[in-house]
Amino acid sequence: MDFDLSQGLRAVSMQIMEGCRQIYSHLDYRAAKGELSEYITKEFLRKYVPDTYGIDRGFIITSDGHTSYEQDIIIYDKTKTPLLLQHGNSQVLPVEGVYVTTEVHSTLTFEDLERSIEDIEKTKKLRKAAYLKPPTPVYRIREFRELKDYFNVVSCVIVYDSPHNLKELTEKLMELNHNRNVLPQHQIDSIFILKKGVILNYREVELGGKMQFMVLEDTRRAYVDTEDALQLFYLSIMSRLGRVWMHGIDLRKYINIQLEPNVVKYLEKKPEDY
Image 1: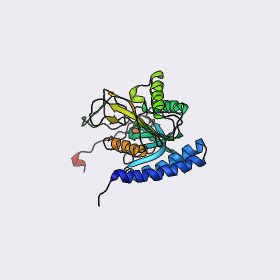
Image 2 (image 1 turned 90 degrees about the vertical axis):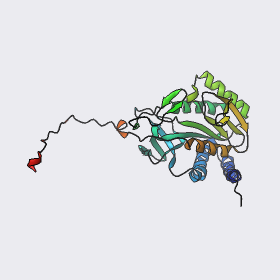
Image 3 (image 1 turned 135 degrees about the vertical axis):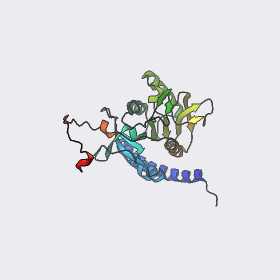
Image 4 (image 1 turned 180 degrees about the vertical axis):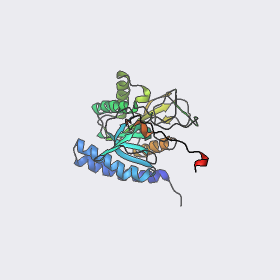
């Protein structure tokens, strides 16, 4: 019996879409957004993303006290990332352990898009500094001409539908990024609209694929009309998780405990004293 992964994911996608349609048709905007986020998280991501990754709602914080807005979905390394705080259903996680964030909308207007640009820019500006560096650099990452010991956070948006078509949204995204002077490394990476398609990035020279889910130095914006936006959302996440890793997190930089400079003196015993 032949197995077609694409057909299997398409069947799952249709089930998710039907669940989203029912949510969207029976609830107002704010309620639908929350339900849609929970549905995608519980019914899709937690089933198909490996258990080594945590998938939660919450805030991201740096060791020097900067924080993100609340994130609908945070994907992080569960084996190495400590939970700093928990408040209700929201977690507070150190930025060093975070790989992917996702904003969820039931619908995407131009106003929603502008807020997402602002939220994601703030998140992507958070610096990873509290990690345990190896004595010598085993492997370093170059992203946006910067050589680092860690991977940047990838941030995307997933939406049920939009009153605007993909061309209008793509042009507005580019316009808002330009007007706000958002650097490429701080921009939304991709937007997945379940009922319309995907806004992603296009590379003129094929280096590991012309279509990219991440914004890179040599990519420009593109959009694709497709019924497989949910599959591509999953593919984008797994593509990123398949190539990233992290160092251990140095919690000493998060926990600011002031200790008195007490000095304990002792006499070292000589062998003959034993």
